[in-house]
Amino acid sequence: MRLFGAALAALVSLSAPLAAQEVTLKAITSFAEKTFYSRGFEAFIDKVNAEGKGQVQINYIGGPKAMPPFEVGNALKGGVVDIANVTGAFYTNVIPEADAWKLTERPMAELRRNGGFDYMAKLYDQKMNAIMLARHIDNNPFHLYLNKPISSADLTGLKLRITPVYRDFFQAQGATVVQTAPGEVYTALERGVVDGYGWPITGVFDLGWHEKTKYRVDPGFYSAEVSVLINKASWNKLNDRQKKIISDASAWLEAQSSEVTKENEADIARQKAAGIQVISLGDDFRRKAVAEGWAGIIKQSPEHGPKLKEFFAK
Ligand code: 173
Image 1 (cartoon, rainbow, N blue to C red):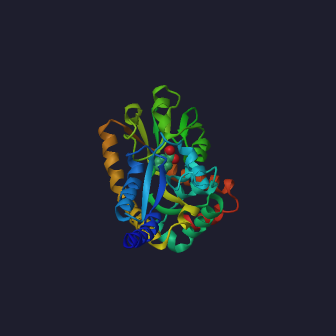
Image 2 (cartoon, rainbow, N blue to C red):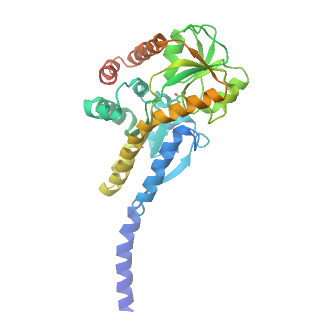
Image 3 (cartoon, rainbow, N blue to C red):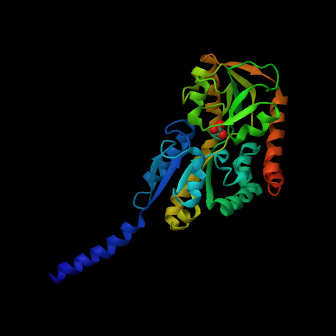
């Protein structure tokens, strides 16, 4: 009996700290599950869960059905979720400067060396209690998609679906704008509430928008950003081994962003096959987008905008 008691005590003392060691992090995506902009994140989760057995696991809550995309930033800040897959335009209420990621003209590896990433990291720390783990979408231009033809960059008379990404540019060209989450775009097109929408080159097929889209305006502009973020307190609770599992998976994920150009080409071909016609306006359209984009960022943040332009622009 005494022996049994000793064995039991040994078992408890061994297993209790082991069991307490595994941490489960709650994760959300601001894009529909299993669609293009969530896919990299889902691969990241699979990797962490495979390599983090007994250490750290990610519990994937899901996408916009679980939480509206524009609320994800605040949820991460408050620790309602630990990890989020989201783009800066969806949480300008928390960090106005986050929308500036769309204006990067240098690869993330360079921004991590030149101080640009660190400059933003400080803002994420101060304003969002968050750490950016990995940008997995880059090299992915935005476009204007339309159901009415245009012959110049003048967008007067058009009503366009936007997020903060496109607001300054489309408005400067005379458009009327209405902000919606991606989940509302199909219905807005179907009902004729909008004449078009801003969206990157990839993902038009994910929610069936090709059925309601006649034209794509070229050239594209900016570089879409989608990243995995973690709440700072959630990060600080991890031990070194757990942090390494997350960091390694993050480095792996960010390296995947160079693969995005292949997806761009595939979707250009797919749009063509679906009968989406291209309206080509020339590079002035893109240059104007960049100029209006930076003007908007600097107006939003006179303190940090000019500094970010130094780091991000060419
Ligand atoms: O149009 C959008 O919803 C948007 O801002 C965005 C940003 C990054 C990737 C995809 C869409």
